[in-house]
Amino acid sequence: MATPSSNPALLSGDAPLFDLLRVPILGGFLRWRHSRTALQIPVLLVAVLMILHGLLGPTLAPKNLATVLTWVHFRGALVLVLLCAGNFFCLACPFMLVRNAARRLFRPRFNWPKVLRNKWISVALFIAILFAYELFSLWSSPWWTASLAIAYFVAVLVIDGLFKHAAFCKFVCPIGQFNFIASTLSPLEVQVRDQGVCERCATKDCIRGRREIHSGHPSSRAGAPSSGIAQGFVILQRGCELALFQPRKVGNMDCTFCLDCVHACPHDNVGVTSRLPGAELMIDPIRSGIGYFSRRKDIAALAVVFSFGALLNAFGMVSPVYALEAWMGKLLSVSHQAPILGIIFVVFLIIEPVILLGAAAWLTRVLGGSELALVPLAVRYSYALVPLGFGMWLAHYGFHFFTGILTIVPVAQAALANLSVHLFGAPLWTWTGLPTRFVQPMELGFLLLGFAGSLLVVHTLAEEDCARQPMRAFVPWAAVCVLVGLASVWLMFQPMEMRATMMGG
Amino acid sequence: MVWNRRFGVWVFVLVMLVNIQEIGCAKSTGIPADVDFRYESDPKHPRVGPNIFNITLTSKTGERLAGAHVSLEGDMSHAGMSPVFGDAREIQRGLYQGTLDLNMRGDWTVLFHIKLANGVAFDRQVDIRNIQAN
Image 1: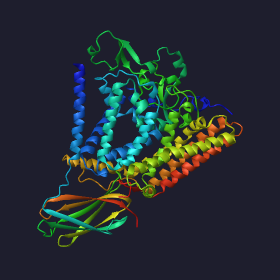
Image 2: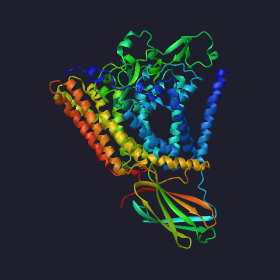
Image 3: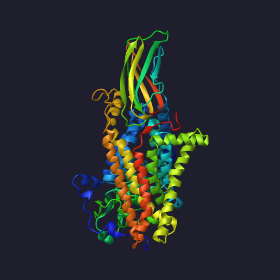
Image 4: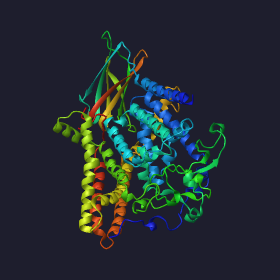
């Protein structure tokens, strides 16, 4: 029985095959100091348009930019970019652009409370958004969708207006947590090119930032490259705001791809390099800014909510959910949506995972002879479900993305027509996207990819835990993967039903 | 003074947000006051598949309004779903009949796009919930 440990062979070893920052043009753009801002500005403009159209435009979801862009294009592009590249949506996050602008007016004074330096708030918010999505039928309401975006901007301004560093990104943002956990399966990672260079580095600018001593009043330094002025220093370039020290950073967890470390490193020793997707789930080294995965119950809870939430979110879009809700409503004599939905959430996100992970952990102890207690075992293996969950998110969001990818054209045409700008004639409402028969095989492919990834992670962990008889630790967790995988495939083949009225209407 | 200015900025932002949201709530359907719109569907509660809609247009004095152009559009509640369309023809004076193929279970919104003979155009929106398969 081996103790959970790091397995560096899975992560490092040979030099990466690919470094995005060394790609001509694109690499040069990303290395440019203002590349993030250049990406954020158009995204912010789109966000403002979405909000305005959501509040003032058509009330029909398929005809409004807020709902079409948010629930069809943003979500789909997000998971596909995470699958094919990395957490580039956090890089282009418009909320951070507004925050950085606001921090020129309001300098944060407080440190994020130690007791809250974990993922529990963000896990709760993640669940809250999934819950609100069903309760308020966010997908069908431009007004609610726009209001959610406004609430996000307000939350960012309040939290990062009060607290230093990237408190919102690291401890609050539910979209960020989704991206962090999904990006553990991305093929690219921000990491050092040569550890030897870091060992010889005396300044550690990647975490501390680059500063210069300044003697004048802060306001006298108009045109200073950064707004961070503290204790007689002007920050020329921020270091990592999420407390990830590059030489000891492992994987993509908590990395927003902001590239501050790239710009701060005086040795040009940080790249965006290729790696084996999901490899970081198979190992348990100490990670800078995070610690050990196996000791982080909050991150394990995030992995569980991410994985089982994927099924729950898709379950809300198929016919059986309405039959279940109607049956529960009759059984409990309840006609209001919230309590029924609450029970379903508790069953899917708490009771079901506790039973499945608890049983598998118990069997691992009994069959495999693991010396770890039930909870540490469940925490350790919960990360293995992330590929399965990601497969389901990809199948679900990919479906809407591919079947509705062209709907943005007529919606944008109609929005412009309302402003008396008629582009290419009447709105082309028949433009939608790929037929379902072409998209379903892709969905199945995503699910199978996730299933294979989860089995691979489980097998690697089992080999480490029970070197002599790894199958004894593998089988219980593989059984969990099979059950979740079968549930995912079953969900995919259910008839879709989109109701904004859960209880029957 | 600095804090007063900052407080003012916050108040301004909040007031703007509240105002925008209030504007968003003010919507009208734009149906002319002197036109009476009625519709019936066959089946009575639409199902997945082709559904016949009979639309009757009358003036407030009870006179049937002939010569209008009526088209139908069905939209799902979820963004990204393909809308369905159909044209209605006048089968009796002031009575128009059209078919919509509602191709998915769930909540639908049916839009009746109407242009009267006198050139006045308006839309009528009807939400039809919980459409099921046959």
